[in-house]
Length: 193
Image 1 (cartoon, rainbow, N blue to C red):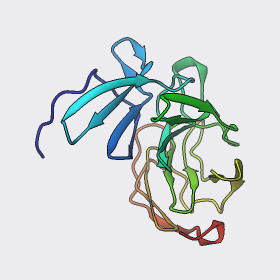
Image 2: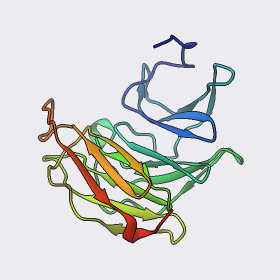
Image 3: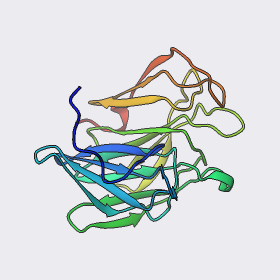
Image 4: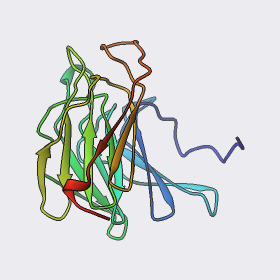
């Protein structure tokens, strides 16, 4: 792996979203606490810039990209517990929009967007780990519940390929625990590509 120019600031526990040829790093923690700015990396120029951060500063959030927009979902902040915040960033206007709250309050979750315009939030943790999977229909502006994951997890990886959602690894219990789970979910009933 090649070393790219250093990011505009140190960051941990944020989310990274690829959209429109750029990488957006939202949320997380920096040396001063909760990160207030979003970092934007442009691979073509190997340069980092800053953009406004999500209206709800938080860490251990999920992120996804669809239709040129960046979506941030859930997360937590130290002694404030888990959040239901759901927001979108439009790079063309440099503005954030607050969207309907995530139905299940959770941090440590993962998110991905399908080709049909569903932003899917899976897993997470509080006193226990979450099996929940919920989808936000970008066109309709509404959340719906999906079948639960077979193995509740936090800190998991998730991707959407077409209308199939894949979840990988994660922690089956709160804290530092690991799982080798890999699952898939057919989301074609929510819409085709």
